[in-house]
Figure 1 (cartoon, rainbow, N blue to C red):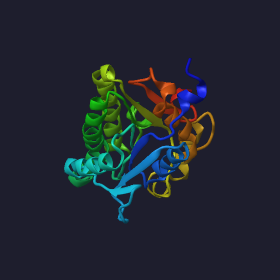
Figure 2: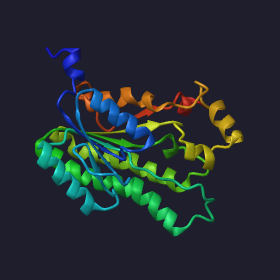
Figure 3: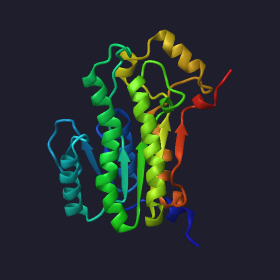
Length: 246
C-alpha cells in the first residue's frame, strides 16, 4: 500500500508556473520549490533568463513552444502546469476599450488555452500530468466591475472541465482553483474602495481577505498523487464567500 507521505511526495518532479512572478503565483512557485520540485517560472516580466526563469508572453503560442522546448531540453518532462497569468481593468462596461477587452481575454482565457495546448501535448504523450488553472469566484455569479475578467474566468472553468473529460484516459488531470478575494495593492487602488471592501468582507464568513500562502495547500494537493482521482474539479478557496446568501 502507498503511504500518505508517498502520495504527497513531489520530490524531483518538474513544474511550470505561468505568471510565476506575480502576487499569488510567486508564493505558489516558492512552495512548489520547497516541496522538492524543479520549478520553472514563465512570466512576461523583464529579467535575465535562467534555469528557473524564462521570459514568456502567454498570448503567443510560438513563445510558449519555445519555452516548452527549452524546459524539455533541460528536464525531459513536465509533471505539473500551474496557469496563473492575469490582468484586469476597472473601466466601466460602456467605456471599456477593444484593446482592454482583448488584453484581458487573451491573457486569461486564450493564454490558458494556449498553455494547455502546448504543455498538455507533452503530458498526453507522457501519459501523466497535472494541470491547475486559475478560475475565480467571479466566474459566477459574476462580480460587479470585473465584466470581461468574469467572463474570461467562466471560460477557464469550462475549458478545465472539457479537458478533464478529454484527457482523463491519458492520466492527465485538469483542475482549477477558484480563489476568493486575495487583493493586490493594484486591486485595492483600482477596484476596492472602503464601501466595496465592507461589502466583500460582510459577504465573507471569515471576515477577511485571503493571503497567498492560503492557496498553497490546495495547489500541493492537486499537484500530488494524493489527488490522483481528482479531475474536472473547481476547488474553491474563498473564506466562505460563495457559501453566503442572506
